[in-house]
Length: 398
Image 1 (cartoon, helix red, strand yellow):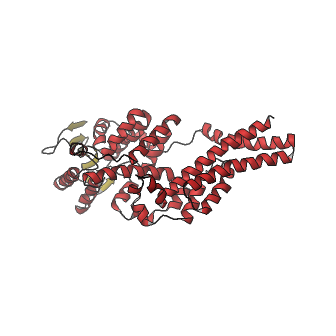
Image 2 (cartoon, rainbow, N blue to C red):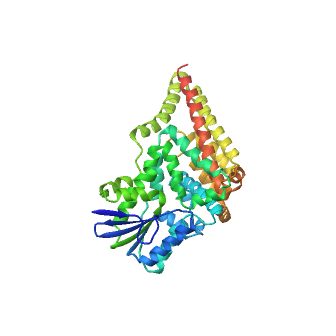
């Protein structure tokens, strides 16, 4: 039996009281950039003294908020090895978007979530991180988005970086009352329903289940206002059997695996067939064309990114090889070499949110230059694969 009331006692409409079986859950909907939300959270935790405080964070986002010097421990080489550069970039984009608004609103994003954790700590109340791992969320959203819509998603995120519109006081007052990040996600969701389902709906279910299973009889849960309605709607439902599925990164389909290996197979078999029909000299000429067609565009991409000379050489050498295997791309190889030869400084990690909002900043900041190297060399290698592949397959039939 579930009963929901708005508001709780003397609290505002930002608070819902949910009676779920033998638990009482006080669900607080906050704006992630709002001093009012931070004050409200601290007041309710102190007054209610719940058994557990749940907050809309996963372990990585909590660490990012609670440890300002986290950049010193960020292992970029390990991130590249695990092929998580794209995930890191999206996290930085979203963080930059919120930080930019926070600068105008006079409060840092996520302050109310950190306030909730600290208020609970002072009263020796356990804290439960109830949000899904951000890496799982982003990978599932990317997987759910069609190939043609992925470009729109990236364009939307990048556009948020370079939007330097100054807001008037009326707009700022409105934003103080909203969960800004969820508002952005909702806008994306209108154009990308599949991504919205992952970014918002699945997380509503995930957080509702985590809140229901938190220890104790009286729970305070702090979530973004954009999730409040969804959590209230799904919390009476038993979705425990869905948790494993929505907390898993979908595997690459067999079709994509076959496609990934078919291109290098076609190239290698074509060169072998050319050698069989026209001799080893002709096969060697086509192999050389493949090397140049891949190596030159990838090296040019590295030069456009102002990469280290060793990275440029690596781009030329790696692209012809990595194009023949879907296991690793030239972008990851070159990004790794760039980090080894020109590692970002701590101050560049700290200024990345500001630097990424300008074109100049992407080339001046060494961390952002790693991303430029990753994308530019990968793009060059992709161009070379299609140009070289087309030429070799054409030569097979001449």
